[in-house]
Image (cartoon, rainbow, N blue to C red):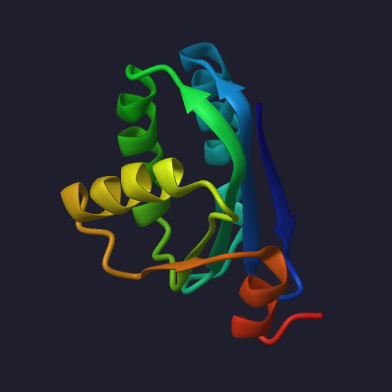
Amino acid sequence: MTSIRLDLENNVVFIKLSGVVSVEDGKKFLVELMASLPDMKPGFSIINDISELRIFDPAYMEVLEKGHDIINQYSPGKVIRVIGNAKDTLFKFAKFDVEVRAEKSEFVPDMETAMQILNLK
């Protein structure tokens, strides 16, 4: 499952990936992402909650790359990935970040820490 929520006041995009994510989920996510990002100001932050992500189709990596390309068109700022206890997910996304040169990513254990980094309540 995927979801996107915008906090326009604080210029933050919340992206959540949870459970089992399919390529079809990814295609719907890309459409929603393209519709959402024009509302954001340059330098917006992203909190990407992957703490409940269990598995995704290997073909989903292509969707992630497209999503990364779309996001970069809108000049994002900080990217924070909430990983919880999902070490396997951490390794996959750390590798992905290196492959797509996502130098701005930071990995945190929980949503509370992500919110503190951005000084949000």
